[in-house]
Amino acid sequence: QVQLVESGGGLRQPGGSLLLSCEVSGRSITYYHMGWFRQAPGKERQHVARISRIGSTTYYGDSVKGRFTISRDNAKNTVYLQMNSLKPEDTAVYYCAADQGTLFTGRPDAYDYWGQGTKVTVSS
Picture 1 (cartoon, rainbow, N blue to C red):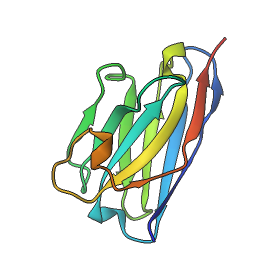
Picture 2 (picture 1 turned 180 degrees about the vertical axis):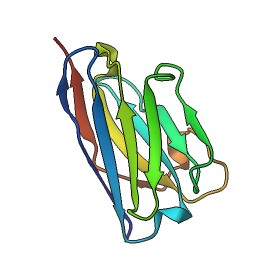
Picture 3 (picture 1 turned 45 degrees about the vertical axis):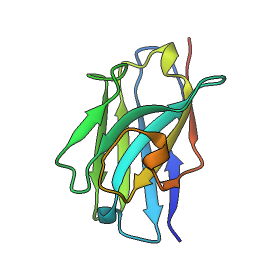
């Protein structure tokens, strides 16, 4: 059984940084494209970033381009999201997800496995 566990969320002031981690167990993450999504209260789940199976290709949502960086360490079965220059509008629960398909899309319904989420709050 594939399980994803996010960590690293917390409270930061605007302009601060956070590193989120997503540890995968049950199968090698080399089988999956990996993505980060977020969901703020009352809003739909939003694509933040995704990375291809071997890490050669990445895509970012427009609102985080230039501030967030997704990476993966296949040897550690872990995916990361480095978040810099945080803004209050980045406040949300952040989810890691795994896509075993071939489309490499940012659509949440394409992802097969999800973590439980980690909360990020950006506030002064």
